[in-house]
Amino acid sequence: DLADPLHEGGTAFVMEEGEAPLEEGETLIDVDKLSSLSREIRFAEQAFEWVNMTYTLYPYYWADEKEWDELLAIKNDDYQHAEFLKAGAARVLVPVRKNFHEKVHSFLVQGPRALEFESEIKISSPLWLPLYQEIEEAQNPSSQNIAVEKCWETKVPTSLILLQADDSLPDDFEVPDDCPDP
Image (cartoon, rainbow, N blue to C red; front, side, top):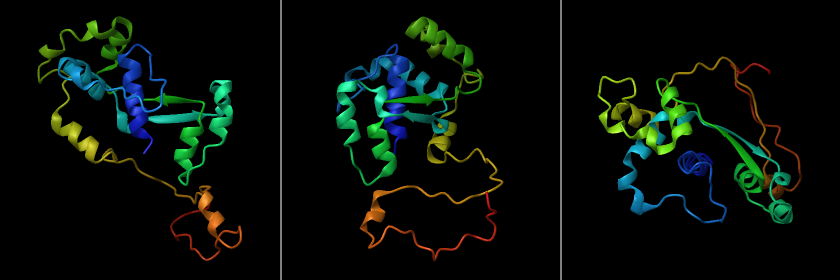
């Protein structure tokens, strides 16, 4: 799932003043710092609606020109993962949770100093996010009950059809009756 590395990178970008890792395999989380960063962790996880994160992958040519050949040569059976690995850059949009807009703005302007009074937040505060709500959102991201009005057929390219004798797609699958044409 692409959401995990993008979530990790997005958190690091906000918390480390825009610096993200450059080396493959480098982790962004320093286990030794976790206990001293509890306010920052709570802020990063509660202020943003990570389940509603969207992203756009930009082509290889946005990477360093020396990497172009390597990026273009990447192959993977998972088309989406291959596109992620080949991307020269990514644009990630993460909505700010209601009642956190001012706090996020303060954090972006002041850095971690903006969280100095975080431990004083009362349960009655609009910045208090109940644990049960965090758990529910993590376990059921679709709990927002978004109505889907129309459905449509989507064809996703994959290298797996190369395993077939010919390059045609099967004609014998049925479209559900309740699915209108786009």
